[in-house]
Amino acid sequence: MFHSQVDNPFEDDPFFSSFNVNIDGLPVGRSQFRYNIDDEFFQRLPFSSINRADVTVDVVFDKAPDTYSIEIDLHGKVEVPCDRCTELFFHPVEGSHRIVVKPTDKVKSIVRDEGLMLIPRGTTVINIAQDIYDYIVLSLPIQVKHPEGHCDPEMEKFLARFSAKEENEEEKENVQGTSDSPWSVLNDFLEQSNESNNDS
Ligand SMILES: [Zn+2]
Image 1: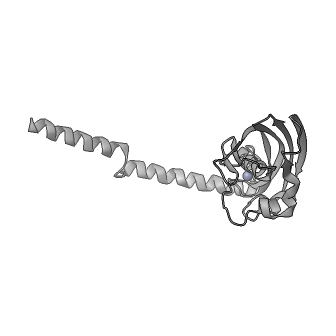
Image 2: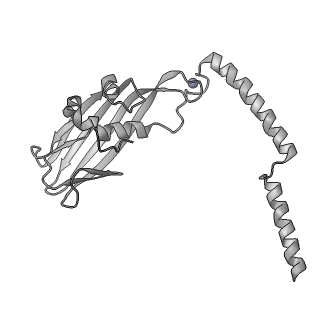
Image 3: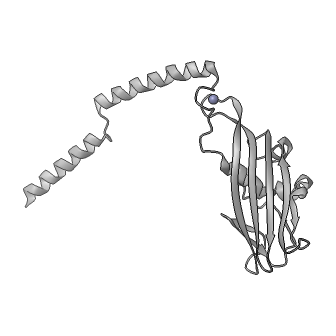
């Protein structure tokens, strides 16, 4: 996630100004917007490892007199390297999120915290590019992998040999018994309880 205060491309790069929502100018009630997130969105972010994307983002902005809420629906795909075979592939992106926006005197700049956005009272424009970025990245699993059987076949063969070797080594270790194996912990415990029995 992006938290740096200096050099924030979402604020500094004019490309992202199309994600400005003029909350002052919006009527009370629900307003809808649709964005299409393409390759350029991610290519303009120096910290992003994603280079290609096609995600439709539907945003509903619900305005009440003193609070707002933003619903963000994502539907599409982004290109990521497979954690298993390293080949690039498109991973689906899906998700629905709701952000409660609260104007307050307690903050000097926008503070985001898991579904809550605190904005300085009097803020007239909110930029939601960062929220869209965060939700797309968060929608990806920790391990991104091709569906079973779709990895690069050459790499698949290599991995099969490699994991067979690893299993052999694990077996050897189990036979020898390492110092932190569950059995050595149990042995230590038995020795200690024998000693305390002798003391009494
Ligand atoms: Zn793969």
